[in-house]
Length: 406
Image (cartoon, rainbow, N blue to C red; front, side, top):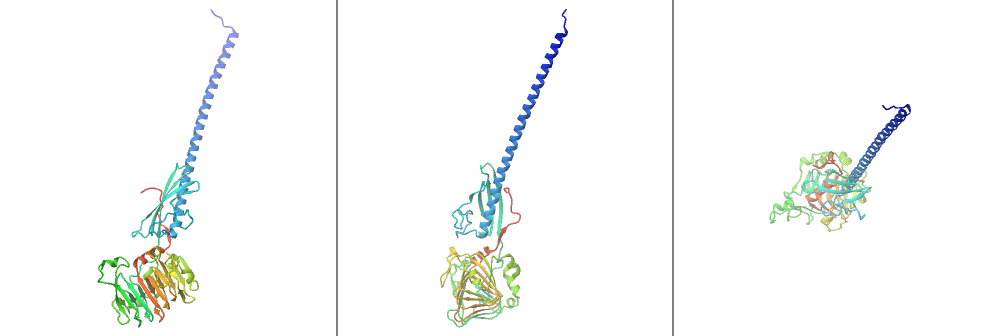
């Protein structure tokens, strides 16, 4: 028989308490280790999420900045180098013409793609795709936006000269329409004077390409229809439907809105009769409004709708022709040798005292008088008139923003 003393019992109890403490310590240490590892992994995941979010924001910000840059550039003129296609957007050479569609923006970068969505390729509706990248290129965001140009000439003329009142030629005048058989439309009398050079010209039926050539501007040969002696069928005069229109109705007939609304929504260059000669000279792809309420607007020797000034019999080269719409709200005088490319619309009277050349169409809400020393040459050109439609204000199309492919 073995006897256990009190001393041995106390020793065994102390040993068991030490073992329990060791086990508890190991358990607590393991828990702390697990908590530390879990916390570290959570912090690491949060850092990854934060970094990914930051990179995504970098890419998104770069894409939005690229869209803004494209809208700013293309709204002013989408074809500044006159090559017939949409320009690159970012101007690296600082010469006002874009050289690339890729650029670094802030901490990110962006690549742009532009697409002409307009039916006739006149760049009046453009889709912009911006692909933004983060600084390390690990994140990418794509944004789409459409911009469109408001049409400032919804009802363009189909003949070169329109007068709500009379047209009196005391000097010389030649009016061409190689795209049809109508030259002058007047609500009152048309008098072509006694100058031997005064005549109207229409598409020549004997042209080998006739009548198909009339579908392509400036390709048909022309033949004289009216002169100082004979008024041909190309001249429509005393049209009561035209004469009975009010001044506002006459304006609405071409521009589809009132003068006040048009001035507020479409005009890109606004001036008055005293500054018009300076402000309108060498304007390209603009809607110009001249307030002539203070007096007659004298347009003396200016060039409108061409990149370079043209004088005498010179004609603006095709690659420099950028038509404008010129509206004179009042009376106007054409002196010197002004040249206009686009449409000239004068709500009041027109007095031609110098050699005047119009490529597109000329319209007066009252009368036109050419003095003895005045010379008038009008070439109807539908291509120029259609190009003039690009002169309206440009804005983003509602509902066109998206960040997903379709």
